[in-house]
Amino acid sequence: MIAIFNKFRIGLVPIYVMLAILTASVTLVSCSKDDELEIQNDFPFEVNVMPVPKDVANGQTVEIRIDIQRTGNYSNTQYFLRYFQFDGQGILRYYDEQPYLPNDLYPLPTEQFRLYYTSTSAVSQSFDVWISDSFGNEKQISFQFNSAD
Image (cartoon, rainbow, N blue to C red; front, side, top):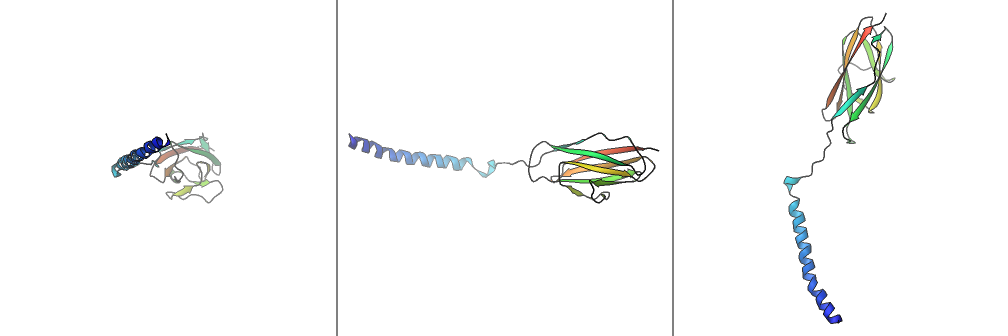
């Protein structure tokens, strides 16, 4: 009985070898260059801004709370900020850092942050903030403050 079992087991070895070769060839053929795996790392985003006052007096500072909302998560995404003031005069800064210069690009270390705008004029003021990511996606936020006497 053992002799019959050994012959049966020896007869299965070529079948196992053929199955292994067939499996390997199917796997290699299915991984051709035309079917490359695409990894998405470019995710659009939205920007949420908490309400700000409508009026600002000369010398007054307004807090602007901003939250970047990703539609996907790619850990190497970097965010940047630039701004341009086209009416009135004021100073925009990130927390207590040096004031931003108009049209210069600044990296944002976090996706939730606060900007502080200090009015330096007695007229209405308007400026835009652009937030962009390292893939070229960009959102514009417009701010307008009336003069408060």
